[in-house]
Image (cartoon, rainbow, N blue to C red):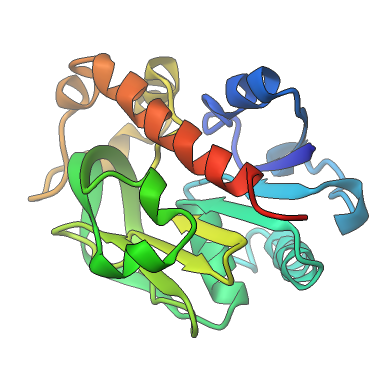
Length: 232
């Protein structure tokens, strides 16, 4: 299977995803939007992964490539590709599917519990999500659920943390892919976001207990394996 990753900034890479792909024998290619590399065509991949980034889905004037990227996401969904959106990526997917993306009442940055919803049992991804997990968050905006989506997870600060659309499209507002080194990169490049708030942790709290990254990767591996198992 051919995975293609869209990366928006250098300090938010695919984290643990390449290791999972190698272990499963899949090819992985990457387009770095920050370097204005050309986007692929839907026929070039089987699975599209859209990563996070500090920009908003509404920043099309500052980042004109967001328009082209959303067009690619839409074409990929129409073609029945597997699509995984993470943080900004999930917001872009939700927007392409007609849902609103808006500023939250409070920013959510750090490790906070995510709870699986009762509706998740109807999704092929539901069994891969534990009833509750600690996940790393870094966002100030959130998405409404697209029409027809299954609501998979929520947190105290953000009602819509994950959705399944059509059994082939998965949106995750939180980060399961980030490694400890990746979290340090985010703190270095976006430390100004850590100015305080009920749901904003300090750098020491984010980096404390490295085992949390390992546990998050295990959950993500389960979700990726569930997507892998979908019929072609």
